[in-house]
Image (cartoon, rainbow, N blue to C red; front, side, top):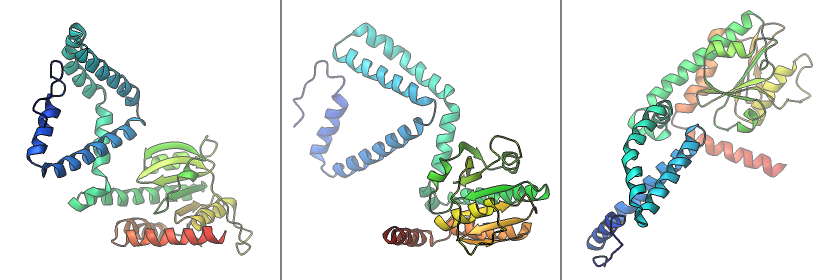
Length: 301
């Protein structure tokens, strides 16, 4: 079918023509071709999505332009230009690896924490990190309580709260007790509002939460506690509240306020309702149940 195909000097389409010839002689290779295309398309898509968030995006557009120029120079037989581009291309690849080493490392780390890795047993690392994050959050809450520094930490669970995070200032940092304590230090730019933790990251600070306005709530409860209750009613997130008046730690969960918690009690609640909930076998069923509840609420409205 493709044996008689020709193209100028034949250098560009030779691999493609050879592959198509192989397909005509072995139709079962079509399955591998489709699988090949799906994998390559997915990898390209994920790379572009990630690159847009980094400084590599502008350089990536430049590389695409160079590749287009190389193809044009080969088709039009611009031999000098094509020789120069082909000569410097290998050195350019090495330079890119050196310059963008941090970005490449982060990309591989994200690949390692992908949900698909749990089927290969690699999800244990994410479980360990999630437990460590809980310990760090508990340490931070305890330190805030000792100094009677007001704090409001919201932990995302199954329902995403990206819209809430967008009301504040993006942080995108690893969870650490020192950073959490510093974010709530009085008279600092980000101390007023809530800190949002999602996917093992502090994603935003100084966020505005919806306030619970139920008449059953005691008038003595302050704005910070009402905000924690509000987010726990509208989503399945858990809010940790530290009172600046009493130094007591409270947790808002599913519209209920658990008050005056000690360090051990706080740790157990977070382990059970965040870590165990995230990694147990019923996560998919729970997400479906949550979606149904949200649909019912929207229908009633």
